Length: 398
Image (cartoon, rainbow, N blue to C red; front, side):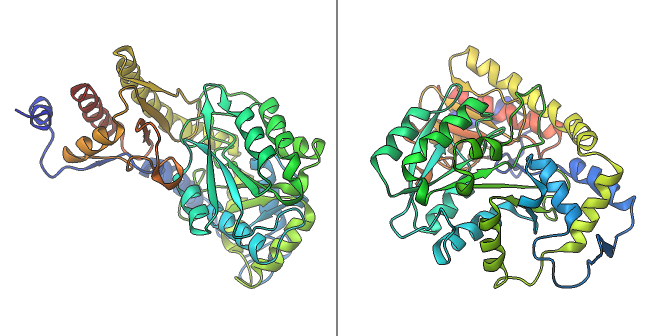
């Protein structure tokens, strides 16, 4: 009897047509329902801050939504824009703006390279690849990014024009940068700061599940290091309210924002101010902190479940893994460097995982060891089945 048949025999509930999915970090239906109930409890505003939300105009977003973004991102309100639903779209747009118009301290060229922390977010890498930007991988060490590697690469190559980071509950490792690490990163870019872009994707700024270190304002640390013109902070409410209908935010130096608004005026006459008004009204009645506390009650038990299975595998010397204090992911490292085999076998018995190498530029995992686990979407019963399948496969293949 082969391994897959053994697993099916040991898991009698596993049907031939059942498919479980741990690929994407999506809010669960219960998370979305929590936000839906908040939306249903208020009426849609059509005017706010003296602005007709139904019409064109106000390309920077309404003031109340900009204030909301500044709270989430820990930025200055007058240096924060409130826009449409995807911060990933904003990343695409600031890259394009840098290419075609150029910011004061960032003008991308066909020769531009970016430093990418790995394991990292697959969509960041695909976006950079689509722009033809060469990606240079820098690994996470146990306590955070390899700062010395960042310094080494930048000091030797003036065509390195950017870095992309998820500074809190990093996707997928869960690392949260200390102020000292942020300071070191901002100091490391000094040799190239005349043409350098720091993309600071703070997607999980509010998503603490356990006690997590406090972070100072990245803008303040950038200012201290003289790189405030290089910093672009991104975020959204996608995993706070509705993933398909949130608000995105960008914060940067005033002259960068002026340039960006000018670029966006050729793309759209206005952001979705109706949605901005709706979100602003929601969080005038319920604080973000209280709302995230309710979301935590739904997410934390899932993280605890996944961690219990991974701890068991670690005790068997079959893996290493990060123990995140928030965010949406676990980062699993096979000690036998057989991630592709694990992923393929899981797929054959009904558990879908991201393809091997997804958390690395060009899908190249140098050790064939990393697997991202996204526990938020399935209900707790299905998640336990997912982890039973995953654990059985890892054990059988080792």
